[in-house]
Amino acid sequence: MNYADQTPYSDPGEYAALFDALPSDIPGLTAVIRNLVIHYRGGGIEFTGDRYEEINHRWVSAMLATDQKRNGTALAVPREPVDRLVGCCRDYTLLTVSALRHKGIPARSRIGFASYFADGFNHDHVVAEYWDGDRWVMVDAQLDPAGDFGFDPRDMEPGWFRSAAEVWLGFRAGTLDGDDFGVDPSAPIRGGWFIRNYVFFQLAHLQGDELLLWDGWGAQSGSLDGSDLELSDEIATLLVASDNGDAAATSALAARYAEDPELHPGDRILQLSPAGHPPVPVDLKTRVPVPSAPQ
Image (cartoon, rainbow, N blue to C red; front, side, top):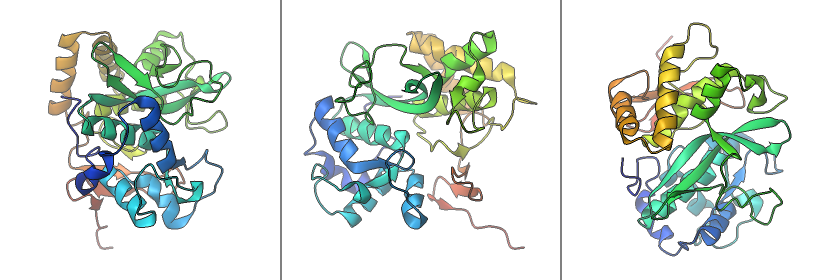
C-alpha cells in the first residue's frame, strides 16, 4: 500500500483542517499528540462509563469528533489531562500516522513489544514509523523525550522495540520465553498465544487495517492448541523478510492478506474489552455494533 495515503482508520474526515496547523517536525507533532491523548491505564486517572468507552474509538475521525465536542479548540491548545481522549499506545500512534499522512509523509503503525517499560518484561506496544526519504524512522509518540529511557523516542535505535513477528520466531526457536511478553507481568494475558495473535495484528496494521488491540477475527485464538502454527510461522517469516527490504515478501503478504479470510477482518470483527465487558460484534462498513439476534 501507499503509506502516504489515509486508510479508513487514519482518515480525519471532516476534521482534516485541524491538522493543517500542526508542525511537520516530529518533536513538535508528537508533543501535540501527547496533549490530545491520555492512556487509560497509565495516565493516573481512573475513567469509567462513557469516558472509559473512548478506548474503543477505532477511527481517527471519531477521536477528533470527541475532542472537538469536549474542547472545541485547535489541537495544539493545551488540554487538561482529564479532558484528553482516553486511549492507548495505538491511539497515540494512529493520530501521529494520520497527521503525517495528511502532510504527505509516508507513515505506518507497527505492532510488537517494548522492553523499556519494565525490567525483564516486554509490554505489548504500538509505535509509528515514517519515511524520511532514506529510511523508516521509528517513533514512540507516547513517550515524552524529556524522560530517561536510554534512547531517543523520536528516532529509536533497533532492539528497544521488537515486532510481533520477530518475537514469534524467537519464541518458536526457543530463544525467547513467551511469558516475558504480554500486557503486564501480573496478568495472564501473555505468552505464546498472545504473541501469535499480535503477528496477525502486525500484518493487519501494515495492510491498512489499524484495528483496536482487542479486536478479534479470523485466525486469532486464545491458546496455541489447535492453532495453525505453520500459517503463523509463514506470515511471521514473510513479515521479517519484508522489514529487511525483501520486495517479494512484501508483495506476497499483500496478496495473502487480500485472499485469505483468516488473515483479514472482512466486514465484521468482534470487539473485546480490556475491562472484561461482553464482546460486541461491529460492522466495519457501517461502523456500528451489530444488533443481537432476538432471544
